[in-house]
Length: 329
Image (cartoon, rainbow, N blue to C red; front, top):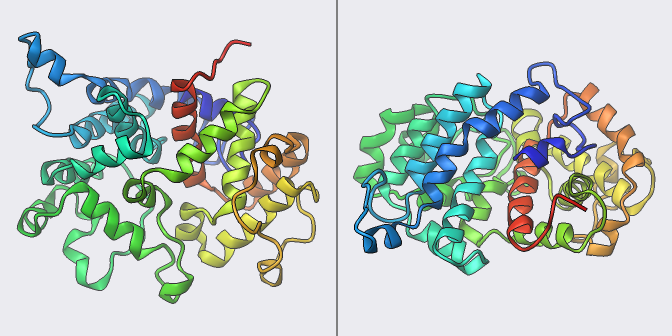
């Protein structure tokens, strides 16, 4: 989490050189420190503790993702005073849990999310009482499961038997941009990770692992690779799907080396502007971060905040570190 916010430039997001009007770099440092106790809860090997005769019983039976997430969010808010890394924690907690069970892989994290319970969903909903998170309206038939209800949604969750993975599946299919036709909406990328085995996270982790130079710079290049591949959920929620796709096209220009802005500044460029698919590792490694500085300044001025892409970058950094990436040269 500290490395993610230190990477620069990450167009539109807080980094070590840029604050936003309502978020500052030091707030993210505090949020990362405050979240630690929740991540430690996710990391506990309870099977080993039980074998050693020391089951503490702090977390519910099954994967403790809900309890760990709720504690991490509470600690984040206590130290940062605001929502800094809610989405990062939503991805990190199951990854940390997969590490604790000895299988940090797409299959391992899929097992963790499938083991999530209704209790985990309730804890996730309670977390929304501590933070202000930009979310879109739920589908018309799922109003009772609107996350903005917080703990008040518990009866509906229990009546439907909705696990945390079920909730993520609902979010992944609904998409952001409630005023747009369903086919034009942008899926919730973090929710998609939960139900798809974290493909974006592991792909970006490989970009970071096979790159050279300071780890924070590798993370910044991976951020641009992710943003150039798919429209960002937070941008789509706050500004609409069309703006999110334009932001993706502008990031693609940087990845291709066309310049920070290129000519990709309008809807007419969407068909040719975005990349055909995820960039190759070599294309990500070749990203010129000096070119990205211009785009970063433009995004901050336009209040274009691809926060979901930052969440995915944070998750990718965790996997890369676990697989051998080092902070020291």
